[in-house]
Amino acid sequence: MKTIEITQKKLSGTIKIPPSKSVSHRAIISAGLGKGVSKISNVLLSQDMIATCKAIEAIGADIEYKEESNHRYTLIIQGSNEVNLNTNEINCNESGSTLRFIIPILLLQDDEVIVTGEGRLVTRPMKPYYDLFKEKSIAFEHLTQGQDLPLAIKGKLTPGTYKLDGSVSSQFITGLLFALPLLSGDSVIEMTSDLESKPYVDITIEVLKSFGINIGNDDYQRFYLKGNQSYTPCDYRVEGDFSQGAFWLVGGIIGASIHCEDLNLVSQQGDKVIVEIIKAMGGKLDINSTDIRAKNSKIHSMVIDVSQCPDLVPILGVLGSLSQGTTQIINGERLRYKESDRLMATADVLNTLGGKVTETPDGLIIQGVEKFTGGKVKSHNDHRIAMAVAMASIASQEKIILEGAEAVNKSYPHFWEDFEKMGGEVIGINLGK
Image (cartoon, rainbow, N blue to C red; front, side, top):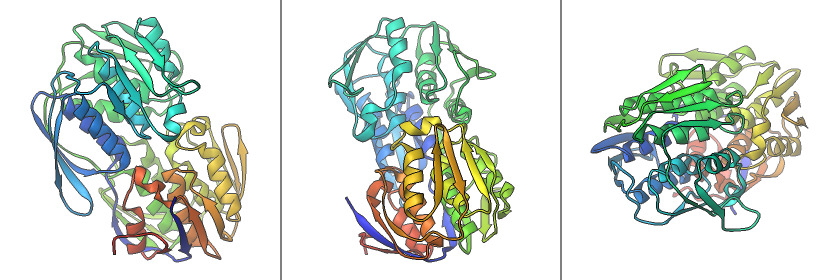
């Protein structure tokens, strides 16, 4: 576990925001299911993305990796057209997206497959799929007592109606949206509860459309999927990631001035709401169509509903802590089942650093402070917690010691390199110098 020391420095400069992890997963899987060659450009090979690449290689796709610049890659993907397994075990590492997206795809064929993972992924909720397996007579077995993974599955999806609880994660819907159009008949996905994180489903539908798959959406209550569709190869560039951009935008608000490039304001990404949240709190943003400059601002508290943007909570915790008044984060109960219990982890690190944060069952109550005091904290093996701690250092009176700094590799392997380029000071991590 890597322990680093972060010195208080105001960040400034221009940064190209990393490509969207959510869009990348979907584009790579769509290309992997295509009949022919697709080119997916502006891909960051984080741990999660590598897990998805290996998963589609396991179902018969072939990938050529071409390095661009600034840690980005172009993937030349020869699609499998149909699922041709070359292994009976797929390791999703710690990627919940990879796990939940690949399972229905594996059920397009009827050989037994074992899906496994690492870290907290082995206990992340999977009940919506288990309920479907029982209803559709798909065999499944937990191979380790007390854990969801490794999971052995055997059976084949058939056209029909699929009822899903939408309150756990939109990833289950996305998994079925990938697979059901490839069946021989039409299918319907019916939601049995309100769908959380609707923007992630919007991203799925938009990416699938680029690859020739059409989905009917009846107000997020039913999704209509014509059968006998096929994935058409295409050239696809992954846009910048508002989930990652949020850290740098907040860094500019509490620091000096940060110019963020490659943020598409008409994106389907739900986390683009960070722009509206910052503005509503009094933050100064200069906005163009593909880039945003965040400038040092005095900000005030507000109530923030995170049901559609749960990944923003750690950095919103930092922003709320440095706001005047009391900020409330609500409707974030699902955050307890992420890479960490993110409500607990966010409260823990901010309180250790001198913040005043109280957990509620579904959120946080954050009293504003003038500055953080510094201290020693753990990343909780959570990439978003580690990056939030880095941004908290901008407004810290003393140094911050962070244990588990390598957690950023899950989504943003060169984060600390970018942090130093923007003026941050980090001791104890090898940046390849």
